[in-house]
Structure formats: structure tokens, C-alpha cells
Image 1: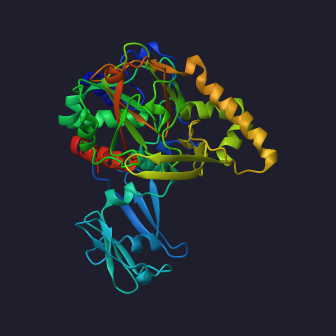
Image 2: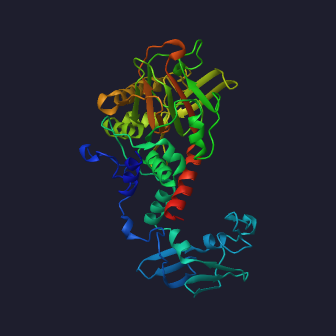
Image 3: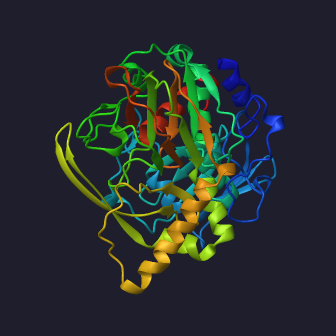
Length: 433
């Protein structure tokens, strides 16, 4: 099972899964801009870059570095002084800045720059000196191509889109717990594809907590550190019934919903209870192409969500979220949609109400097309991990049989913790810096 993921990891970000050749070509997130990565210095990837020349452009207040590979980088004086790596300016043990901003001259000049053993040495007007390693500088090049590559390295923003023909990347639960390469492959696939299936977990409670320790810690919510998805009397959540669950993301009633969700099958229903998932980012991009007006409405109007009750403690939460969140470059970053907790309060002018309903209807119909929905059935010991900001998930109704009825245990984590562990594992496995 591990080989399913390690092949994906070794063959590149978008060469993925067993049987991929039989699937339709998948769509990647569009890039902003037309320049190629080869057009400018990229973040340092190995070997020591050589500086051919370093010179101060005093009028522009820029340091120009000419590299042996023929490329050139420009660095503002103020940024260099702000990021001096000496012990007085940087606490090396924490890689944290000690230089107070009140002491930073944001209009500083540069007295002298010279190369010493392939390091760039700078003397400032107050006679403070700074020394920079060439690999450190090249990794922080300000060209648009280098910055884009650096952001991809830090955040893995590229996505592989999918539809009903998805073959979920799969790994062994115990191998992920105990092998760094397996854990790295799991988290990279989780980030790129949005969903990873783990098999072989014990069919008993406590496994989502064990898996979370591989990353760091669980996200505590009003439903507890972990929660039991079962048919319950007087249910305080529609998930705690045996009825059908429409496609949704969890917790849009919070302004910062959990980023990652774990669901572990302890016991499956004898009849029904199949799971459904849809790639929300893919569907949002499809909506943008098919109905731009609907996309603009859902990404600009804030919708009220609410949730109240008592579980870990009593709660009454309220939020305002876009159905589709986009960043400053127009890239889709999060889907916020749960029809059960969408509030009757609709804080928008009356003339926007009907366009909102029509736009949401277009999106939901797109989500529900059979060619976009992947359906699977969990068995005891299966554990699915998925991106709650990206995927919408649902469940078919099932036959409830009291104490022996369907039982899943769930838990949440935030993407900050998951990405932190991914970077640490990448450094341990590959030596990435």
C-alpha cells in the first residue's frame, strides 16, 4: 500500500496514482503571469551558487549580484539591513530577528560591499557589518519567477484536480505512523490531491488521535478533540443521524474552519452509508468558466452561518463567509458551504437575494453532477484524511440498528500544523532547507 504513495512522490507532483494512465488528463491550478521559471534565478536547490560580482547601485539603493550562471539578482538596501544575520541582529537558535524596527534606518545607504570567500560582506554607514551566504541570498531573489517558486516550495500551492474517476492515493496506517518517507508521501498527496486513504488501522476508537500525534496536535472544537459520528437520539448535528448528508464542508459557522479532517471507520452500516466527495476547487474553477457572474457573486457576497447547542461545552457560533474564498490573485483558497448551518439571516440588500440564490443553485448543481462525485464505502479499519477547505463531502443514508449501527470517529487539524510537519519531514527525508 505504501508503494501507491511513494511512486506518486518519486514520479513528481502531478504523476500520481496507480492506474493514472487510464484517467482523463487532470487540470492544474492556473498560474498568474506568463514568465517561465527558467527566466530568472530560482530558489537554491543544491550545490553552492557562485557570485561573480556584487556592486551597490547607490541611486536605486539596490545591491546587484551577478551569478556565475549568468543570472542577476537585485536586493534593496533596507531589506538587507533588516535581515542582517549577525548575532546582534538575529537570534540564531530561534532564527528570529533581534533588530528592533525602531532602530532600522529604512533609508539606509551602503558604505562598502565586497566579496570574501564567496560571501557578500557589507559595511553600513554606522559601521555595522553584515555577511550573507550566496545560497541564502539566491533563495530570496526578488524576481517574480523566483518568488513564485519559493512560495510553491513553502506552501505547495499547486493542486491536481479530479472528478468521479479519482483513484484515491492509499497508504498503510502503521507505515505512516512509523516511517518518515511514508508520512511525507501521505502529507504531500493530501496537499496536492486533497484526500488520502489509510488502511489497516485497528477498528477501535483512538486511532485519529494516534494519527494526529504524527503531525502535532488536534484542533479542539465545540464537539471535542474527537467526535463520534453515530445515529444519536436528540442529535445536536445532522451528521449524528442516519439520514443523507448533502455535500458540504465542515464548520463554515467558524470564521476559521478546520483545514484537515480525519474520519476513521470503527463500524459500517449493513446497508447504505457510502461516502461521497467532490473537488471543490475544481468545481469553483469550472463555475468561473461556465458562469462567471455566479462565481463573482459567491466569491464577493458574505453569507451568514450559525451553529448552536451543547457538546464539549455549550456554544452559539456565528460567522460571515464567502461561499468561495479567493486570494488577491484570484486563486481559490477555500470553500465554505454547509446547507444545514446556512443561516436564515441573509445580510445583503434585497435586490441581491435572488441573484445569490441563483448563483448558489448553479454551484450546487455543478457539485452534484454524477461525473464530478466520487463515491466510496469505508470498511472497519479504514481511515480517510482530507482537505476540509477544498473537498465537499457527503453521505448516503443508512439503516440504523441501535448499538451495532454505523460508527465513525472524527477529528480536525489546522493546515498550519500539517504544513509544519510536512516541511520538517521533507527536510529529514530529502535534506531540504
